[in-house]
Length: 127
Image (cartoon, rainbow, N blue to C red; front, side):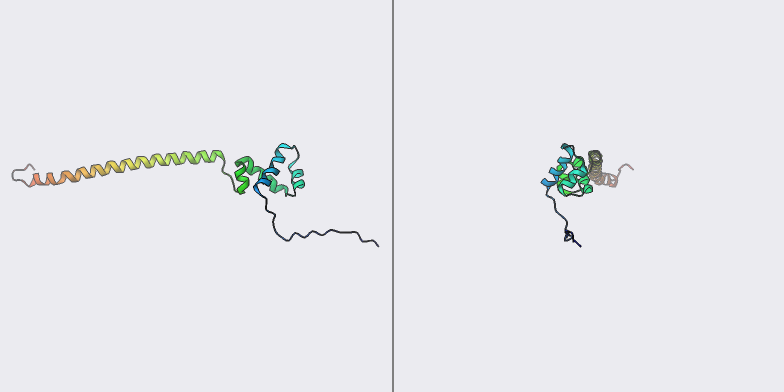
């Protein structure tokens, strides 16, 4: 009985770390070479679902998203947030102006009170 050779691969349980340059190179292969994502993944030793994720991140947020491996906020969401910030700044400006006007009115009313009080205490003052 002949024994065939078997190769046993032990992983060690550690994940491989990909540099940003490697991620970009592999994702660019899927975009420009015309090969399927699965074929590129096999050729580079990457899980296809991970490569799909890197590709989605790059298409949504550019190379910075792939480098950080972070979730990406779409341009539409950024524009909506910027519009909301502008609206809140406008409201803050309006409230600040209202506070300044009320302070001036309060200061003017305080400065008039003593003269009105003195006039009302004078004999023959109009009441």
